[in-house]
Amino acid sequence: MKNVNEASPGKVHFISLGCPKNLVDSEIMAGTLMKDGYEVVGDAEGADTVVVNTCGFIEESKKESIQRILDMAQLKSEGKVKKIVVAGCLTQRYKNDLVEGLPEADLFIGSGEFQNIGRILKSHNQGEVKKTYFNLPTYLQEDSTPRVNSQPKHRAYLKISEGCMKRCAFCAIPLIRGNLQSRKIENVISEAKLLAAGGVKELIIISHDFTDYGWDLRKVNPSAVDAPVELLRQLAEVEGIKWIRLLYLYPDGITSEMIDLIKSNDKFVKYFDMPLQHISNSVLKKMNRKMTREEITEALTKIRENIPDAVIRTQFIVGFPGETNEDFEELLKFISEQKFDRVGCFKYSPEENTPGGKMLDQVDDETKQRRHDAIMEVQQNISRDKHRAFIGQTIEVVVEGLSDETDLLLQGRTSQQAPEIDGVVLINDGHAEVGQFVKVKITESMEYDLIGEIVV
Image (cartoon, rainbow, N blue to C red):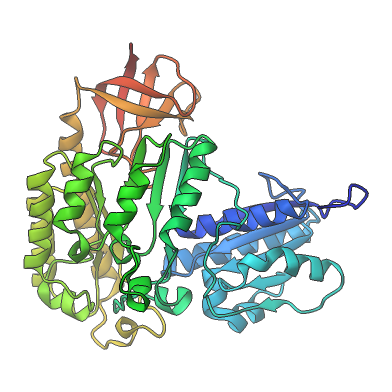
């Protein structure tokens, strides 16, 4: 326990970039430092320490990470920040190159050492000159791991595994995060119960691929119960949870048993986040995706036949090496036919030390941009039509707070909208508290958002 006479180590501010999995790491670092007496503050200016938890997944995210570090370096030069810690995936991936390129930073902590940030900062404050802390990314969250939920009290992310067992040709995640490591099912459920006891009503289950959960544990022990469907069964029994949302499901792992369980239990929102990446068999093969167009279509059909109102969100990559005009037109037509509820589109970014980055038939940036814009135009029209169909309906919405655009409106989400990545429901009539579930009658619609009023 901290001595009451011991001076506080100061204030720390976190900038967490990239995916929710990275956010959970930031929450663990925050929990660790709070346990050591630090005060976590919401503004960088005036903080003794700023931790920039970086993303190193694609070129755009790398640029954003570098820019945020430089922004903090400027504050440091003005005397508004004392210490800069660069952590996370970009640090792990580029190690010494990043250290040489960013002399303004005081410490570099990779994704294999973030859990030791308390000890590292203490050593640095005591005069340790070492700046770099890297290790293999083998750390796995435990029951005793300190963590502070940074989300509104009614929702939280629950990370069930680290790393990835797949080897997609475009992806650097295994290089950064290592191979699949699943948490024991009792460990996950224990955290879920703790979050529920703290007031969480919506659990958002995250990993690099939910459908691979437990594969590594079952490989070592064939009798292990750690598997996706069993995890869902046990999560459904956690008292106090209203919505359970699954993110990142590889389509070949979505079984009939999983669909039946999601269909039959009201706690599971009927929301399938399936990053398909492409639909041309030629491109899928080059991507090393291990699935064909026919198998993807079969998975989509299986979901829709069993859960007609299921929301399907997906992501595609355009401009992967060797993607021809015919491949792209096939993808564009597929999107038009399938009418997905949500579509994200990324322009392929050649990544170092990945098979895709070494391929010779790279696509030029102008073509990537043109293909990206064509997909988003098609999807905007689909989304607009789907949202119009909500006008006149009364749906359940969880209130998130004041609108990001104006203090005159409340903002919420339906079960069909995941936080941060999907649209919202703007509430222009009625009052409710943050975290409250209310009935909203939809009166207007936009491409991505809905507008409505609270009804009794």
